[in-house]
Amino acid sequence: MKRIKIVLENLPESDDLIFITGFHGIGYVGFLATRYLVTTLKAKKIGYVETSIEPLFTSSTQSGGVYVPFEIYCFENMVFFCANYGFTSRVELRVLDYIAKWVSSMPFTCAIMFGGLDSRLRKSQDVDLRLAATSEFIRRFRDWIRAPLLEEGLWIVGPLARLLVRFEEYLFPAVAILPYAEIMRPDPYAASVGISYLKDILKIEVDLSKLLESAEAIEREIEELKKRWERLQTEKMTYM
Image 1 (tube, helix red, strand yellow):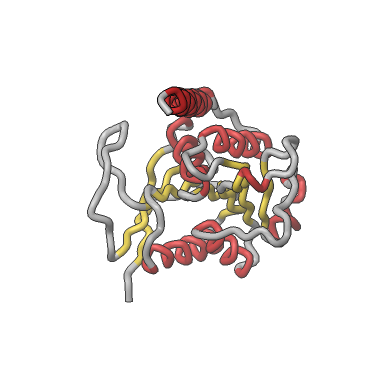
Image 2 (tube, one colour):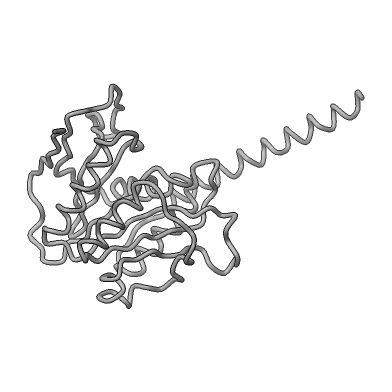
């Protein structure tokens, strides 16, 4: 049996804890949004998830130390689960089952998760994102449903789907915030759209300037690559 354990200092004393997470899906939106919130809010690391199989790589953190695969942070009544790399094995997927059971059995009022939707599926420029929510979330947090729900027939896949299914089974209120995003690259702008929605429903302040600067830098780089490609095509036609 593969071992999974949550190593935790302590949870804040609150009866309205909110669980927040996101993963390396379309546009890396979930990971970017969660990590940006942790960094910008200066959330405190309060624990991690330990498994019997750990990756043979890591990276240094900005504040010193190194990342572990699954970290838990806290800011006020918000508890963040940061998955620092993609899920690739059955053991890692079992971490999600463990997390879902833990969250639903602790004093959390709801779970809010970030993901991305393929921007090619966007039917209207007036709609920046869609939501996917469990039945219990819609029943208890209807006031937080301020965007269209995901159309029936469009599928959510990966870690986000796993958690949503588990939370539905546990009758636990959970919602996925799904901004439309680019599928071929990280999309910090889409992450900012998701965070803006979170700011609105939770009434919190988060400075999005650095995230938007990253989005602008990526757009400039893409525009430059397009210009280079056009120049190459023009030169090619000249010598034909």
